[in-house]
Amino acid sequence: MSDLGIDTTRPHVARMYDFYLGGKDNFAVDREAVAAVEQAMPEVRQLALENRAFLRRAVRFMVGQGIRQFVDIGAGLPTAGNTHEVAQKAAPDARVAYVDNDPIVLTHGRALLATDDLTTVVTADLRDPESVFAHDDVRKLIDFSRPVGVLLIAMTHFLRDDEQEPVMRVLRDRIAAGSFLAATHVTVDNHPREASEGVEAAYRRTPTPIFFRTHAEIAPFFTGFDLVEPGLVTIDTWRPDAQDPTPAPTGWLYGGVGRKP
Image (cartoon, rainbow, N blue to C red; front, top):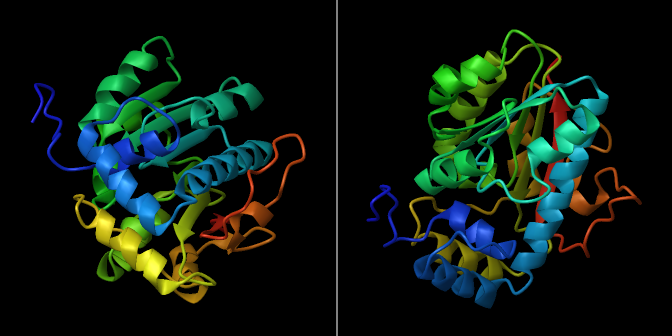
């Protein structure tokens, strides 16, 4: 355990994701876990880049729909091209609350964003969604009586089956009509089962196991939302943008954006 309360004895998904994207805010234990994931899924770094490209497109879409406040849950470390940069480039008044359960995100994120009054970073957990809505720093920045964009990018697959409905119900019920939900989720569809089993085994070393699901099992995460076209699809086919081309598709992720009616 570090002086900052960061557990360096077990890998953490935020730091692993940072390493996938070429970042430096990770430890040897995280890199060892990534090596195990890469043995099962050699294209995992490509998947992370593909996922980040979907995030950019989803944020730009929501800004185009009038959304000016975002809650990015499980955001990881705020690296280049993250939510606040994309949103504020399109709408300088956009406000962003980053949420993650790894203390390293809070420590590094607040240092990076110290001069940005429209962005905050807080420690809370998707599995306790009320803690997100109740957090003082989130409430100071985000007005939940108005539409908001909620981002669960590569996050829903960390929820167990018994957590799915209660967590998503709170998220859905606590946001205003006209809000949007963007989510991506790893899938077993059209891939060898031994690959996903290898990744699941690697993530069992972390505090946050991962669960691969089929398209039919992922769709209920959007219950209560109207999916915008083209629906829940492999993320490379979700509103591709020639000005921001998607990296070579892996087919490992489904994603979509839903609007609360």
